[in-house]
Length: 312
Image 1 (cartoon, rainbow, N blue to C red):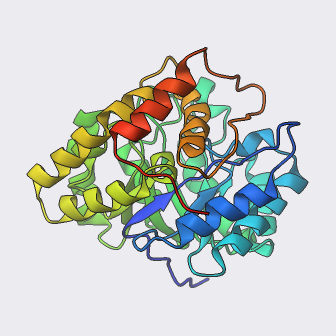
Image 2: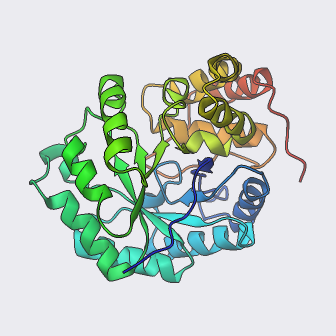
């Protein structure tokens, strides 16, 4: 099955799913957020229903409606990519098929979550990508999890998956810079057509020189400077990239240097309030509100990073 791969060589934000104060999906806020991100030159697509989007906390009906809402919000200017997260391969394949029917142009295929604890059998990841694409016809992004998890893929597993029909890009979040520095050049050489995207929200300076783009939740709150960092990375302009890193560092710390990376989703919503997109930072359990004072810290970091409020 031949596909026309998307061009994600730039910034691909992974936006949050806004909720009303009573916990329902806020489709009006999706329209505001999606239309803003879709209007920015250099934003190549949006990945919805990921970790930052609380995708696994939604019902199936809500998931499909969120895809449709984001497709509507960008007015066909950029593609919407759906997180595919179901545990079993066959149900993930059906999830991908429904996502495509809802308007998704590609899928970010997560590892089976049981692998996080128990690891995976040799060949199982390759089979997962193969079967999901066969059933759905949805172009897929390879998702490399952190090295500290048991579902991180070996170099050979990544090369195998990248060679399969339907796989056109890789979201790499290995978070082991030794592996990053040794494996990315091999993947570049062996799979030259694979688009490599960093998802290291807190290590973007280190990784921006080796990639085609970024697929990050961070892009939801700071798309303008991150697009400039991508350009600097491609130009091998360390001075410029470092200046952007330093500009954003207070914000990076208050969003991502927390006890759990999951808290970053809550922080992203506070940052979107500071930028004038959201009215409040409501999340769904098992996420909880941040401690007292966190919202003020995030708002101050947005100001320090010189990120203006967005005119609505």
